[in-house]
Length: 84
Image (cartoon, rainbow, N blue to C red; front, side, top):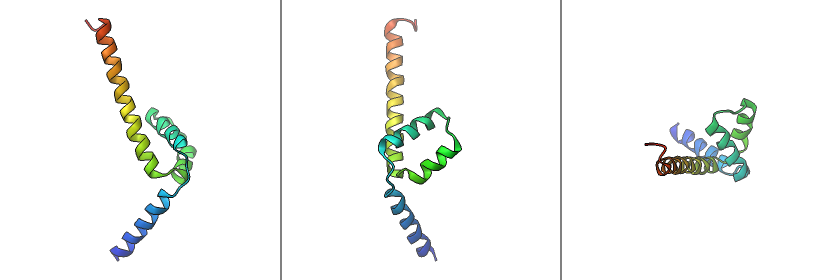
């Protein structure tokens, strides 16, 4: 019984990875998600269209850019002497 469930999960994952959502569309959805404002209808559309591999890559890329922006902001504040 578990093998059927595993096979179905594998087939579902393969079907999800074949979705044709563009990477730019994925980046836009991830950016809105980082802000925390997303309409439920847009979320449902994204779940149906976006490739989950693209979503993971876009999420990691977005998080890295966010951390880089914070580091640059802190360095700028420290260098300007405003933190003293």
